[in-house]
Length: 437
Image (tube, rainbow, N blue to C red; front, side, top):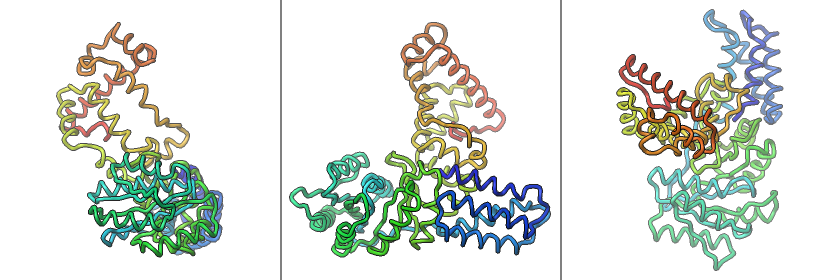
């Protein structure tokens, strides 16, 4: 996420490296480079111009302290401007009403139906009774897709096959929600391959009929400036409350995220970070600015970890490490919990400084698969007693996992070194964090 933008901004800041102070000349050169980077990253030209003018004005008015390098000062100024550009603070959803009604809108292919399920899963985790309503009567299998996503999320889906009128279906779905004590209704509407009058008129009429408490516009971040232009058109017609940026994990430029708030004047509320059901994050402008500038995002990392790591399990693992009893069952459990946190490169990118260190390193999300295959090829007794795994046992594990003996030997060596390190840390600190930490 934002790798290209981050690395280019880092190079722009190096213009000030070695400079003792900020001057009109050196800061102007840096700001000019920042503007070029933003435009190359698909940020709207007017937005890029306005932001860099603010950066220049702010930088020239700053006194550089002896303890602060000019490059560091400019990074702070850029961070403040990026945060302001993306909305300053997170925007909450309006869930007032009985039931609260959320209307989903967007083009076909933007990930709207999938995100409807993700949003339902998120709200369910918050303890809300949620109903998804299938109002896309045009796209083949759209209703079935919503049912599949709803089942994965553990959320009920309402459909009404007797009607092809999305307004009628939406109203019946809301009535069904009232009768069945559902507190939040998410209405999934039809998308089109392009903005057209029939589509806009239909979504306008649906909004008038159901009077939602929250109208969200879902847009594919990978479409760049087209995302901004489409959002502008939708906003003029249905005056939505917030934006959802999907497929941000595949967007190398990131210009839509930086431009859309300034152009449309509506907040980004959520971002899609992976195809998985839990691949959704609340959008925090300040945290996103930190990640763009390579500062990491420790708060989001901790929040993700808290969602998947069990405190009692962590305590149990901690005790086993102290006794040097950490085994392959524990190792497998920790790996599976890490996988639940989402895209691995995205997760480690939240650690300050790691983005720069790993910028040229390809991290495969399937990297854990060979390790899992080897562990699962062990017998329960072997997993509980790693010291038993010698000679023919290693050959059998290699055959069972489709790996070679060298890979099994490498795993055993790394596991043994990790256990020694954990034991050493336990002796030094008295308390060892779990594997994720």
